[in-house]
Amino acid sequence: MNLMNFVDYAGTFAFAISGIRLASAKKFDWFGAYVIGFVTAIGGGTLRDLLLNVTPFWMIQPSYLIITGIALITVITFGKHLIKLNNTFFIFDAIGLGLFVVVGIEKSLEVGFPFWVTIIMGMITGSVGGILRDILINEVPLIFRKDIYALACVLGGFVYYICTKLHAPIELTQILSASSVIIMRLLAVKYHLSLPVLKGNENEN
Amino acid sequence: MNLMNFVDYAGTFAFAISGIRLASAKKFDWFGAYVIGFVTAIGGGTLRDLLLNVTPFWMIQPSYLIITGIALITVITFGKHLIKLNNTFFIFDAIGLGLFVVVGIEKSLEVGFPFWVTIIMGMITGSVGGILRDILINEVPLIFRKDIYALACVLGGFVYYICTKLHAPIELTQILSASSVIIMRLLAVKYHLSLPVLKGNENEN
Amino acid sequence: MNLMNFVDYAGTFAFAISGIRLASAKKFDWFGAYVIGFVTAIGGGTLRDLLLNVTPFWMIQPSYLIITGIALITVITFGKHLIKLNNTFFIFDAIGLGLFVVVGIEKSLEVGFPFWVTIIMGMITGSVGGILRDILINEVPLIFRKDIYALACVLGGFVYYICTKLHAPIELTQILSASSVIIMRLLAVKYHLSLPVLKGNENEN
Image (cartoon, rainbow over the protein chains, first blue to last red):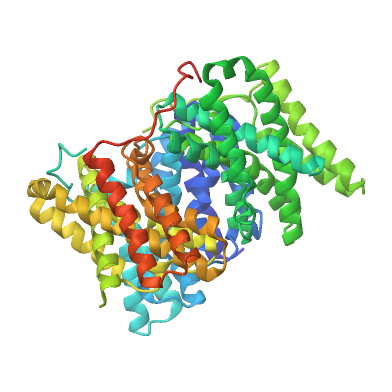
C-alpha cells in the first residue's frame, strides 16, 4: 500500500465516520448507519463514474466496504468519546477531500474530457457524497450553506489545470492541487470564511 | 407468463401500491402519485442497471408502466378499504422483495461481477425504490429505522452465494434465497425484530 | 446560433433562475445557489442521458455552465426587482419546458427506443431538474402537487407521436409538440387547472 492508497483510505474512513455520526444523531440502526457511511464515502465517485460511463470504482475492489465497516465499529465502540477527536476527523476529512478531487480530475482526464469537465468531476467526487448523506437523513445539504467546501474543490481543479499548463511534474501537480483544497478548507473553517448569502427573494414561493 | 413473471409483477404491484398510498397521504395529485408508485417499483432495478451499465429493465417492455397504472386505479377505486388488505400487501411486498433480490443478483452475475458486488446489487434492487419514494415525499427513509429490511436482502444474497458454492440446482438456489428474504421480513415484522440503534452523538451537528 | 439554440438557452436560463431564486429563499451562499441553478437546468437531461447511456449533454460544451453563471449574476444584481418579471420568467420556463420535451423525445428516438420510452424521456428531460431542485432544498417536489406540469410533458409526447404517425414534417411536429406543452402549462396556471388529489389514506404510515 503506497501513500496514495493510504490517503485514499484515510479520506474514505473520515467520510464514512461523518456519515455514520450524522446517522446516529437521527437514531438510525446499525445497518442504516453503515449504508449512510458508505454512501457518504463513495457517492461522489459513483456519480462521477456514472457520468464518465466507467464502472464505479467501489465495484472493482471491496476495500471501501471494509473501511466503512471499520468506521462503523469505531463509532459503536467509542461513541461519545469520538467528539474529542473532532479535529482529527476534520483533518482526515480535509485531506480526503483534497485527494478525492485529484482522483476525480485524473480519472476524467484519462477518459479524455476537457479541463472544465474535469474540474466539475473533481468537485462532484469531493462533495456529492456529503450531499447524498444530507438528502438521506432529510436535511438541507450543509455544503450549500456553510464554510467554503465545493468552492475549495473548484480551486483545487484550477490549481491542477495551471500546473498542467506550466508542465509541472505530475507528483508536484497532485500535491499542489490537493494541498490547495486542504488549505482552503482549513482556512475557511478556522476563520469562518464563507461566501456571501443570496438575498432578496424572501417572499419567493 | 410463467411463475417468475407472475411473482415479478405481483411484487411490482405491491411496491407501486406502497408508493401510491404514501403519496396519497401527502395529498399528491393522480399523476404525482403514479410517478411515486412507478419510482418505488422500478427505482432499485434502475440504479442497479445504471451501475451495471445495462439498459434499465423497464425501458425494454412496458409491463411495469401498465402494472403501476393498475395500482393507481386500484387505490383510486378502493381507497380506504385497502387498509383492510394491509396484510395482503405486506405479503406481496415481502414476496416481491425476495424476488427482486434474486433478480438483482442474477443480473449482476451475468455481467460478470464477483459475489460481493452481486449481494450489494440484490440489496439495491430490493431497497432503493423505497428509499427514493421516501426522498420524494420528503421523509427520512423508513428502511434505515424500522424492521430489518435491507439486511434481509443481504441475507438473501448470502444464501444465494452459499447455495452456489454447494452447487445446488439453480431453481433451488433461487427459491432458498428468495424464501430467506421473505421469512426474515415476516419474522422481523411479526416479532418487531430490529437492529440496535446507534447512539451517543446526540450533540452532533 | 439558430432559433433552436436560442430557445434552448432561454429555457436553460429560466430553469436556472428558478433554481437560484428558490436557493436564495433558503439562504444558500452564491456557490450553492449556482449549483442549485445548474442542477435545475441540466438535471432532467442528465438523468435522460444516463438512462440512454450517452454522454450527458452539458459535458460536451460549456454553454450551460455559462448561462447558469449569467443567471446567478442576474439574480445577484437585480434581486427583488426580479419579482416584477415573474410572468416573463414563467413564459421562458414554459417555452423551455416545451423545447426540453422535444429534445428529450428526439434524443431517445435517435438511440432507437420505442415511442412509449421516448415520451417518458421527454417528461424526464422537462421535469426532473425541478424535482432535484426541490430535493436539494429539502422540499416536497412542487410538480407532484401543483398545476399540471409533468402531464403537459406527456401530452407533448403524444402530440409528437401522433404527428409522426401522420407523417407530418419534422419542423411542424416539433412546433406542435412544444406548443402543446406550452399552451397546456399556460392554461393550467391561468385557470388553476389541476388533477384530482388522491385521498383516503390519511392514517397511512
